[in-house]
Length: 189
Length: 189
DNA sequence: GATATCATTTACCATATGGTAAAAAGCGAT
DNA sequence: ATCGCTTTTTACCATATGGTAAATGATATC
Image (spheres, rainbow over the protein chains, first blue to last red):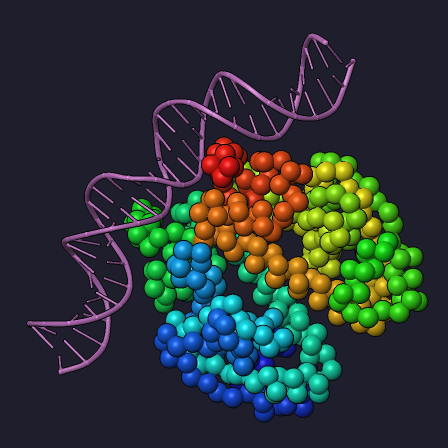
């Protein structure tokens, strides 16, 4: 629990009573490799906080190719937050890349926290804003740089992911084929 | 003024007195083609709302190429909001693509509004979140699709911009050269 | 209306990346 | 250790895009 509370406290102050309330609503949840946390076309039923493991967001593009467009590491929220808040169907999959341990909150419990703790919405709003900004920043070089530079920027952004995530996921994240990525890796050495 | 107030009211309720306060702080501002609204390395001094014209966000990449990574049309905010709020140096330029008319707010006036109107922060937070989500959604195909598909998605997202914006800006937005874009345009016909 | 300036198109060749396929390497289960 | 399955690497050729350069077309200025 501690990493979760520490994470939240970066974005606002909460007293003991408030963190106790939050913790009382959290449920431990295990997700095995390749299982989905939520799926495209379905309403996301819970918000998660990743304690252990790696998760990816992915969707299918025009040509039916599966595109990974986001990775999430330990100590970050796992949620299609916009769709979760509005309780509408998601447009992408959230899938475990490795076995994962998460804290999860149902919509009911999440709302209960929001209705009880003044300032909770401000905190979660801040967190989401931060995540979105980081996502945009990480993805910018994926448009404007060549493939090698893109890969290097990925390594910089996710130094620990290189060996925990299949090559093919990274390749689609970078917008190249896995053959190209394999070639690039070789050239870098 | 009306388009501005209408825009804001989409994201929350304000009474007459509150909108009057907001309007009293707004200053009309003209920005000529190619002039900068704010610059990389400098602290953004104001938030703008674009009444007329087109604006772009751009920066220089690794190779020194100028990259356009965002366009803004009429009736949208023009601001590097994160950097404006924190009053720290921006990392990119905001430049007029055409002659522009804006409403602008100084940091002092913007803060004054926030301190007076309860709920203002929630409204502006929502607006920013929305803009960030839209940005991510628009930029996704720019990583995973081929150049022709990327151009078509641009046309879909910005149907009015095609003829108001130099080809070279669009090309760098799409992550291709202007020669390639010219070729693609020809092939589409 | 002529000229200069800037934006766009076209052409040509070079090169990075894609697509298909096969080989090699890693990994688990028996 | 052996087998089967998955992931990664390598090879080959095809193709889209990049880079350089010149030609054409638009726009503004005088």
